[in-house]
Image (cartoon, rainbow, N blue to C red; front, side, top):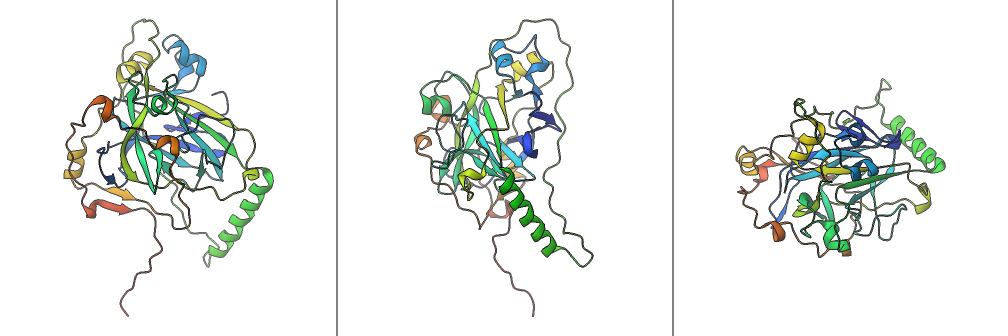
Length: 343
C-alpha cells in the first residue's frame, strides 16, 4: 500500500480522503428482491506486509490488506469522501459495476466506477433496474465466483479498489459551489446546520492468540460470488470524463482469508460466525431503504446478467428465512414528499 492507503479505525483510507469500510451483514435469500440489510460491524483489516513469515508469498507480492470471512458470508462496502471521487471496485479483477475486466482507466460507456460521495455504499454487483446482487464469499475453484463466471478462470479472488481524483479546475468549481450553498443555508448566527458524519469506526475483533512457529500457508482461495437481490441503485456519473484525473492516485488489493487462515496468519481470533437472519427478523430489528431522487441509476451490466447465484454450486440455502415486515424497513433519505399537518 505504501503511503497512499492506510488502515485507520477499522477502515481503509485512500487518497483524497476516501474511506471504505467492509461491513458484515445478513445474507439474503437467493429468491425475491429485498430491502437493504443492516451492518453488524466492520470486518477487521490487517496489512499483509506485517506478516512476512506467515502470509502467503502471493499475498506479499500483491501487497494490500487481509480480512477474515466465512464461506457464504455476505458483506457490503461503505463509502465516504469529503470531495468528489471516482472509485473502482473489482471482484477478482472483474468490475462490480460494468462486468468488464479490471482497468487502470475510467470509462463512462459502460461506467466502470461509483461516484463518491453520492454513492454511499455498494452491496453487490450491478444488476440494473434499481437492484444489485449481494456480495457473498465463496471458495475459488468451483466456478461460483463472479470472476470465474465472467472471465472463465479463477486467478485473483479478493476485492480490488482504485481511486481517481478530480482535476484542479473542476475541484475548485465544486468547492466554490459548496461554499455558495453553505452561505445560503447558514442560520441567523452564521453556523451551518450539522450533517451526519457517517458511521464511527468500530472496534476490531478477537484477542491475540499464542503463536507457535509455522510455515506460511498456501494462498487462501476465497472470492466473491453473487447472492440475493436487493433494492439499491448504482448512480450514473453526471460529470464530463475529462473532469477526472487520467491516472489513479491510489489502489489496494483486499485479500479474503478463511477463519482458520486468519488465525494462522495474524494470531487473532476471527469474528464470530455470521448472525442468524431468522433471529434478527424475529426480534423486529431494522432493514433499510435509500432513495436519491436527483440521481440516475445505471443500466444492467451485460457481462453480469448471467452470473448464477452461489447456491447453484454450494447447494440450497439452509438458513431459515423470516420475511421482513413493512414496519422494519427504515428510510435513510427523504424522497421529497411533503407531509401535511394540523391547520
